[in-house]
Amino acid sequence: MKVRETDTWTDGDVVELVSASFDEDYQMIGSSPWLGDVGGTGVAVPSGPTTSLTNRYLFRLCGVQIPTNWMLYVVGIRQLVTLRALITSGSASYPSELEVTSPLWRFSDGNVSFHLRWHQSLQDAYKYDAVSAPGLDPNMRGLDTALLYEPTGAFYTAPGAGIPPGKAVVGLGTWRELRFPWMNTSWDMRIPVQGPGVLLLYASVRQTDPETRPVQPPPDDLGCIRPEDRFVLEYPTTAVYGRVAGALAFEMKSYLKE
Image (cartoon, rainbow, N blue to C red; front, side, top):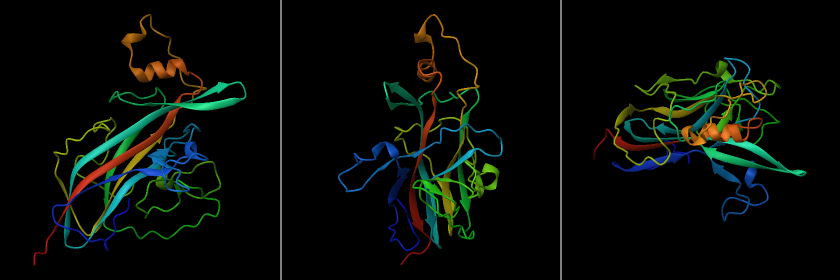
């Protein structure tokens, strides 16, 4: 969902933006009644491992443009991270996916961080890439959900060394845990962000490498470990980060009163 300066606002309205983008798992079956819809919640993380501290996968999860003479109040945030593994059966393979629910869990060689950033404007020069695919965007000035990249022809080149642009929103410029669970509906925060400007939620992912990460020996009692570790033990050679998603709930207030 995109919110533009030309949209009509009513004081006190609460709107929630949720990550959604192209999902290859829905090809040929669709994801809703709308013909040709292959969108899914969040955005897929490439399975290729991150090899450099300055080349982490950078995702734009959702964003909103704040008009002149308006104040935005962030009232709620959601985060989602999943694990994914490919299961082979004969000549076919299919994915298995697990939502990460342990707030501090991460791979030994990978992790995810989230970033709420404010820009006064997004006026970067437009970049065109003839080979760009759905769910990817070489441009930093959009609001939709996408994996951001520099069109260099390499497998992946992170824009700006993978650092999310903009100014940190107080207390939420960077956090490294699942502080706001996906099913959280306690929208009790109230963080002001003044317009005009653009508010964006980003995620940065260091993708794991199943071929080189340490192999964890299974404990005697599998019930004593977290569900994410059980998933990795079940699929030690294919388990990686699968997708990330975010949501922002906010209220808009106008400075101007009739």
